Length: 110
Image (cartoon, rainbow, N blue to C red; front, top):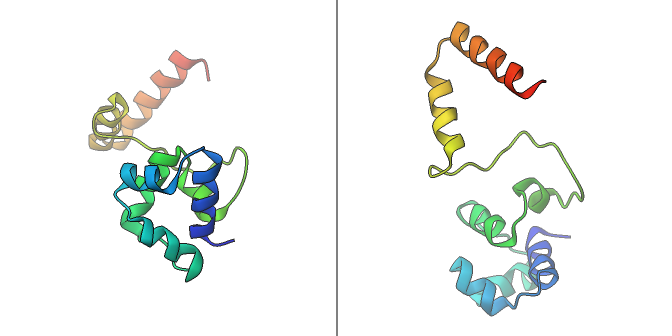
């Protein structure tokens, strides 16, 4: 199954029409039709929008893998508190990163 066909199936599974999906993503219905009829795939610039609207992980969309998968990717937006934590962590030297991780493990009991 192609990515385009997978998207069309997911739209249907979510109980959405292509018109509703088009309104939410800004992707024209004619483009969606070409995913199936011409075996075309969405551009990379549209994949995250599609994943957000369908509430799926990009790995699931691209691979078709079902169930819980550990991809190493986490969706974090600039408005999320996690974004501030990640940005702050990246500014630390290695010694401070290790101290922070130690503190985190102590807090979470891991």
